[in-house]
Image (cartoon, rainbow, N blue to C red):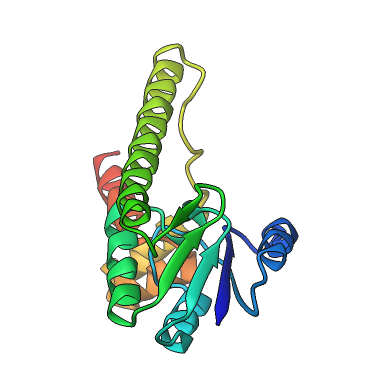
Length: 185
């Protein structure tokens, strides 16, 4: 059976382009995720990996739709190999039915991961430069008008710090940072 896998990052993004491409490749069944590719913890990916059987072929529009890291890709490929399932990536023209296809799959995954790392580095450098130029000051601090009142209640033992954090919608880190700031002033 020819099985297609489609993934977009968010609910708002459209899957039609990938679906149309896979239909032209005679995909018989399709699994569609609307989730980040950072991990393999995606509901439809899991369903597909359970569904596939020996002799099936998993087809994706691009490797990046299937896995975002070389490690994840190789782990998924290992599962496919154990089940004797082939893998085809249309964009990169990779077919793991051949030794060359298996080799190229690993190379493409490594290059894609390297490019993502370069992108993260460029983003960090851009943010640093913007900070130095005074153009980026970070996220605005949250407003917690009832903080002082909640802090007094915790000091009197009327409520716990955890309860105060929940009521204020504040993280533990922010709570204790503000406690320190309040005690200093």
